Image 1 (cartoon, rainbow, N blue to C red):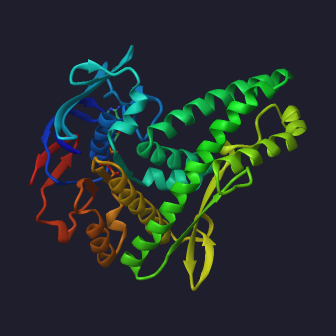
Image 2: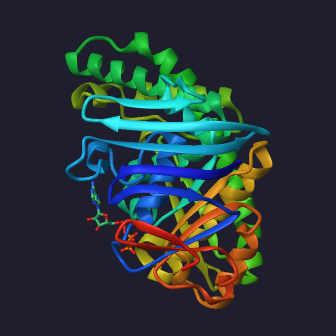
Image 3: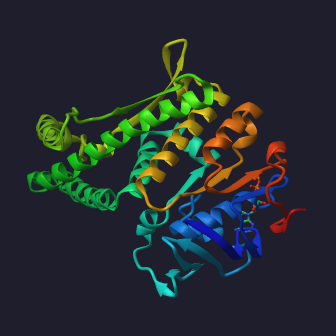
Length: 359
Ligand SMILES: Nc1ncnc2c1ncn2[C@@H]1O[C@H](COP(=O)(O)OP(=O)(O)OP(=O)(O)O)[C@@H](O)[C@H]1O
């Protein structure tokens, strides 16, 4: 997949931009000039949402009534025109001038991988954010997973309502177990793949294994979906009385977590609790690079990488190693200062929402 050009109108501090892109696109400039806003606009164009806010109206340029994005995209050997517009009243997403109703499905159509400070913060926050990041990644790999997840959450919502009302929930159990065990099994197999890619990437980058990943489940796990389903049923029974008291569902993939551990001298430490700022960034980058590799192997479409101000935090040796792992993708990278070894690639200077090429 390739983004050929982008028109941006009234998106945050970006008033009116027309940009033509290359394989590598570096946006540099002082703080608060609009570099991340450009990545956010590209992310919105491909996913129909922001990675920074759920309140999408805050994206509309202050004092304006709407924003508009348009991009020419090369996708599965055809040219597509993607458009997004948001006003106080409505949101419209179009592909080749046809309205897209289920824009939530865009995550499956257009593979983009975001590396951002916000994601690192989200990873530190809590299990729900970590589950969200894992779910988002698996959804880009599998439409079936994406659908199952949305069905699971609908069932969960109904089951919780029933629990709160004190009525019998058994009517929801078989659907919850069926969808939940599918989700769990998919998560486990992808986490296994991420683990082995993480080992490869760590060894390439640091000549040693740096990161361990563990999926922590409220349902005892098993080697097959059927086994997980059985365990899920047993757990629901065991928690029946407590669930009635609490009024919500206590077991299932919606309560699980994922833990990243760094390995120092053969001992594992929880990255969130004991990692230095540099180790957290490196751990995050390795975790993402593993996903980039899995996504490119599994999908026909090469993902686009959006990298927000993460490069500068690594020493030059690691920057170059990371670069080797990503240089074959179309890249949009922001940095406050020019990175010496990338000086020959196109640079866009971002100043007060205006963008100048090779300034
Ligand atoms: N709806 C909006 N309308 C106009 N300006 C906005 C809006 N939302 C945010 N901004 C402005 O956009 C600017 C931030 O841009 P952005 O986050 O892209 O900065 P940046 O260049 O990535 O900076 P940094 O290097 O600090 O991350 C800020 O000045 C902010 O006030």
